[in-house]
Length: 79
Image (tube, rainbow, N blue to C red; front, top):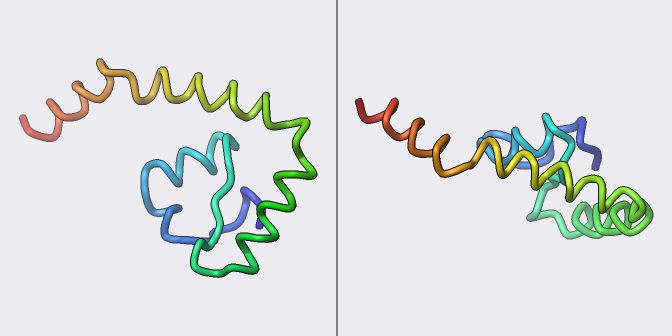
């Protein structure tokens, strides 16, 4: 399972798309135990990247999902 492939419905959510587009995590088919096990193994072997991925994920969360951005989006939707 790589961040370049589609593995679950998560891709069709904003969070799933954000994860894949920004390479800030992993998405896989969570109802396929073998796929989940392979993903965990790959995460373990890539552990040197975990800190970088975490730092990038935090930056994305702080900007894209900041209180001001979320409120702006709700205002756009309900206006």
